Image (tube, rainbow, N blue to C red; front, side, top):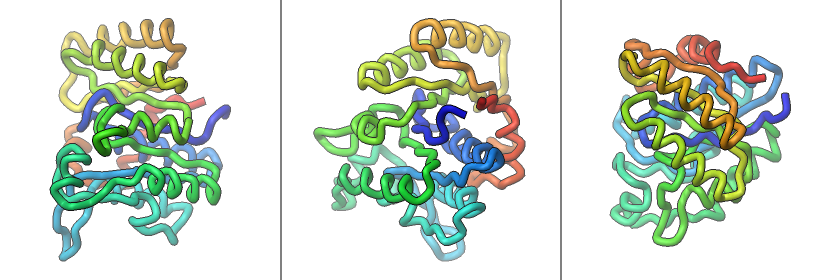
Length: 239
């Protein structure tokens, strides 16, 4: 395998980045890599058994603990904000400062220890973290090959191509992309995927990793089980 660490971004928020990132971590683990997850910032918490948690982080932590049981929430995400909104807006409301250097330093600490880290962004590729910087800057700082998650729906072709151009303009490699169906497929699903396969390969040399079909059971989950991740990982054709 040419690469074992990746940056996962999406065409928008709620497109399935956590599902894909967690499934990819598991797939890499099954291939012999001691792989863990990382997310530089997460927004949106709810109370569970007396604790405030973020579902994305809980999913990443669960699968990461398969190979690194000592990991804690703070190890894989330096900033978890309470409200589910743009991180820079929530940080301002909560009186927090999102420090790019801390995000980069904490990623590097994991990379030094494990050598295989799957990093999940927040929202889309250019989500701001303050008035001057965004997650595209973070992606440049870690300079990993990028995997793009595309929610297959009306408008997804334009969203995917715009994001691919933004990634390329940062001097980063769009390694591959994943088609994810967050709702039931329709008569245009296959055509959308085929169009994106052709254009992303031709224009960006981005290979197609697979299509995750809609699953009502998975769509209803907040924190993914290992069985659900195993099921999803079978659709990822990582070579």
